[in-house]
Image 1 (cartoon, rainbow, N blue to C red):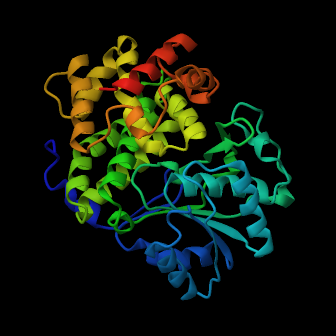
Image 2: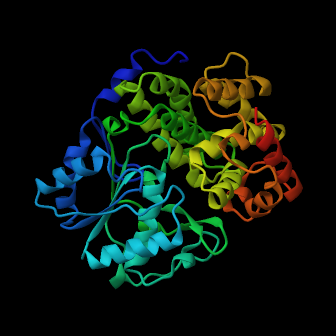
Length: 397
């Protein structure tokens, strides 16, 4: 781990309450406050949304037990895939209506957050899911059919989805992922409890952690003037680069878990500015091959970063500074990213994570339709994106 400010780890062991960009309750054991939060929001019967891989994990029952103490009756919907699908969103809406629920609590990783948001957008509004597609005009929602109160509780330090209203959903008819969003689905409250991430296996700590790293880097290099996002991206990047190796090696280290959860949240705030080709490509790989999103990003990150370097200019210097490098050259930044990926045992090619060798052309064509492609700092043709995918298939680093 690079040098950090004196005793920085201690600050992640205390509870804090933040109001930007939404109400955030940070600290160990803050999950216990969920009942009082529901009372404050006038919620009495929430639907808990989690992913299929988390339904039997202890945090779901712990959440329900805390709610019961405040006489809050909950249901659980867990039919959410690693890459949430439109048909699953329809099923979630049905579960919400049949159960007579009045709010949504998302707990888990990015899949749970994305699925829950999409359910919330459509369950009361009467607006079809794909009308919320990011590139379309924002739908006008009848005030009498408002979005339900929405609480987010991440159990991984990677998604960054806990404070914003964007959601990535797979269109099953096209085999492609699209972003759906509405400002009305911004969460009412987020709980960042680092103890919820302690049980995360080492490989998921790595995959989700590098997902957060990718959010920070891609958001920062988007060519737009947004100092709030840039500040969040750089501080998120500093925390993640410093603390991910520790969280990977020492899974019980609460300070490291807290630093990662904070860094991931900051990186998620930052990508309101936009993302880039790492995500544009990864979205389409996930939509077709159902790969884990953070892992796919991790493999693609060095390939796309090398492609973008010629246009990053002084931003390379700032990235090098916050990553604690004495050498601020392009080569040093790439080498540090690759060293970090090696340190947390990220595979070196897309073929290693199950992709066929002949998919580059169609992935490239689909990636060009992704909203994240439009904010990449260097413009790319379909042929150039195809080359990036082909490189990553064989040897990403």
